[in-house]
Length: 340
Image 1 (tube, one colour):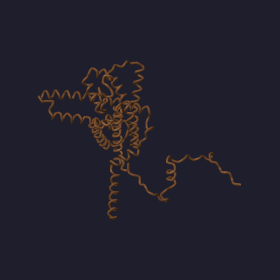
Image 2: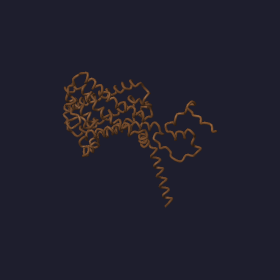
Image 3: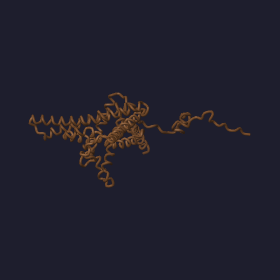
Image 4: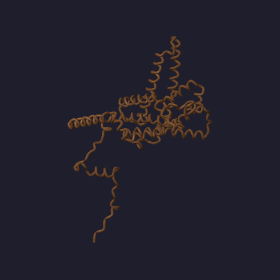
């Protein structure tokens, strides 16, 4: 019986050691070791304000065009609600009519727009730093701060334009499909055509997410890794984001059903949603890093250290985890008085 127990314990330890060496475990372990949960919380908090700032500025710029094209406006709102469920609409946090209100151009509105753009850029700054932390890269002095802010602003503008262009392409493809079906004499209500349309729609969303993840890692965070591992990791992260979008209403339903959170359930739901999105983003970065470095996320061996294996530098590190106190200069050293 004792031998059987020892065999089971040994096999369990071997299995657990194998699990700890797998890439999913190492990626998640690396995510937690660098404080991924704290980074995710900060990113989701910044994303909440960045989204409202982006809506105000974006609809202020494109409001005139969108107001005259209701079909394009409807498609764009659907696109945004796909990324952030329940954000815009009669039952959402922001009503469409409020976004299309005419804004008077003045110094105060210009200052407000500048402040909101700065708030929106803060999410890009926090995301860039978080991803570089995941990869163990410098986060402060690797490039001029002004150039980094200009890069953040450029990517924010590109992302907003990409949303508008994707909405326009979606509207154009839908109109073209209806024309072709009418010309062929086919019914648009066919289940086969409906299934194909759904697959094409989610395929386009998946491709868009892959492109966004590639841009965030390569352009925003400036992570210089081989293209194939980056593309494979971005494809996996985009699949996780697509699953989140498919299950968005289910994942956010708990907040609205909680009576303690009923008065601000939509805000809580958005925070939860952004937390999921940012967590997937950082886990994608950790997955890529774990694939590039096989030692990332491995458990640190714990055990009694023999005296001959512990040198003086290790003793100083153990006593002073931040490198130890600064050495005293000769002028600062106090010579003890000689004994009489």
